[in-house]
Image 1 (cartoon, helix red, strand yellow):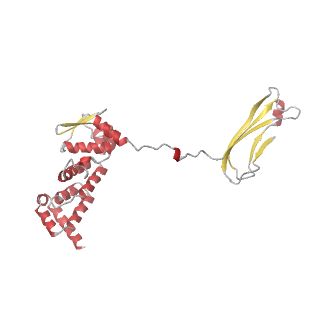
Image 2: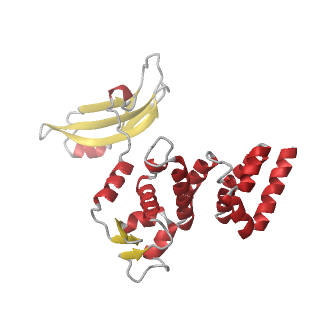
Image 3: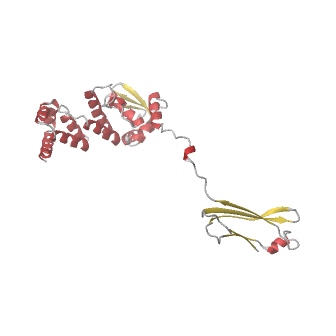
Length: 293
């Protein structure tokens, strides 16, 4: 015996829905309904020929006391779920901005849980190995890999100023440039800002921090002048900063004769000429070609 459920009528709006149906049979001896079968399935209810069917074995039903005097009482529970719950954005709470960089910055300031101390020209800087390793491939090798120091809890950093290392740690923890380096801060004058940025670029290159290196390049590109152009170009060549090198060449190519005379008279140019004569020749050749175009 088959019990079938057929959708006979559907409103104007067709929809795809899930259908759940349960068939219960009345048990005469106990006067209770007992579950016979349950079916849950998805169906396209825009199809009027759709059936939900349940198979019932008549012989078993008669022997079990469900059929008496050829009578069978069936209770059917049918659930049709038209649409899933739709989240209403208007009622949602506003998601606050990420706080992870602020939290990491406070972690650096508080020194809580620090497991490594760097000594830079006598100054000490507590830090966290895991944070450094995640941010810098060089620190990762130094603290966990083949370059690991014998005493990885205390490391001496050579050839770097303490202020520069402090700025480096600030970027590692906050992914942002220190305020002292940015244009809108008056902690350092313009010449000092450029000098610190150059040292920070060297540090970024030393520890494999590409994003910081590019940010330093961008700052230096915006602050080129006759006095510092030669040393900036030397820095760009030494640390493979192609963008900064191109900016230096374009600065020379677009400069007046007066500015070029000032460049040649600068101390940085004379130092560059003595230490890297090939670089000077290449610089003037590229600038000359650009001036002619």
